[in-house]
Length: 408
Image 1 (cartoon, rainbow, N blue to C red):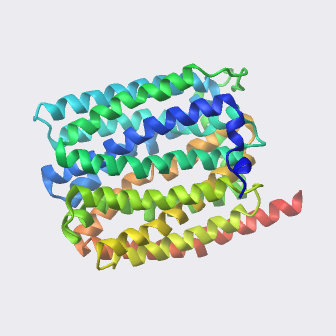
Image 2: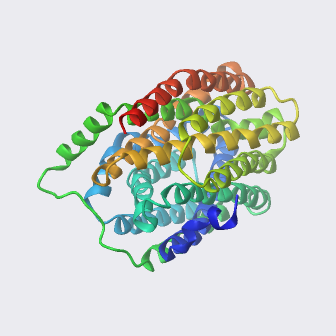
Image 3: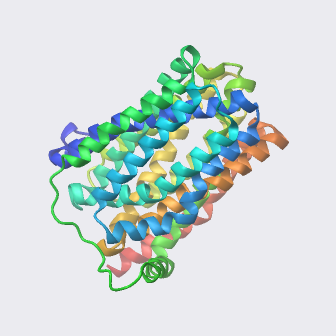
């Protein structure tokens, strides 16, 4: 893996601005996410409450994600991203002020979570489909993997910082720092020099554009099977993070510092997986990587659920994060390469709708399973379900890839 191959997207000025701004902003986002989880756990001590907040954050992405994709295909993407970052900054400021006041309650956190979910319903598909405008198709797979590396580097740094700050200063400072961090990505977006983007003409209404995107995804076997695999990962793989406060507080009795360590360990594995994907010279063999990644995720999660010690749990979360990153980066790249320019926003809205939007039901299911069976057994069951996903939708995706290659 050469350095020039790993960072080749950095030759694009716009991408360098995007990368630096997102690194700062996402670190703040993960600080808020970690602190919010601990705040809810401190207020309620309930795994169901943690699941409910996760549900509130992600449900709007499921309901309105397709509309966000239509907007991304119809309007300038940079403008949409700037507006969404400003709104997210306002929400983080509001939550920090309410927490500083000492009056924060669970229903307040749920309301802020719903509002942030509405912002994410537009921001996520827009951000994913914006990448090609910064780097072009030649460097697309590298930029997607580097984007994931930003996310997961922040996922390492943010929870560790939050774990320390929550124990010393409280959750409100994490929310305030996140609010300030949005200025970095807003500045990066405003400083870009972009060629005029491709948007869908507006003769047809939003409903017609939405239906057109659904029809395209439904009748394209490769896209349909990739989305099926993403659905399994979202329902049974990523939702385990909702239960990290339970593992930190009850299973391992390590408090907020333990929560930061668990989240950071998973983020470290995902960062390593992102760097591995970014260093690949060509966007080939992605289907095989996705299937093996799904199997690896299921295996390591099942083992994590039964880990008797904190250090072993953290060690298992590293390959778990690596596997998750391999699946998602592969699926993201395959979808963007398969989708035509005029459809990319809507296809990526389906990606975010399933990856993030299915999370509400996964978060509630994870909370309920942990309430009934205990967190360790719940995570083991979800890991076994990911293994089944590698044998089902994963195999269907490989068949669709083979058929697509035969036609070309």
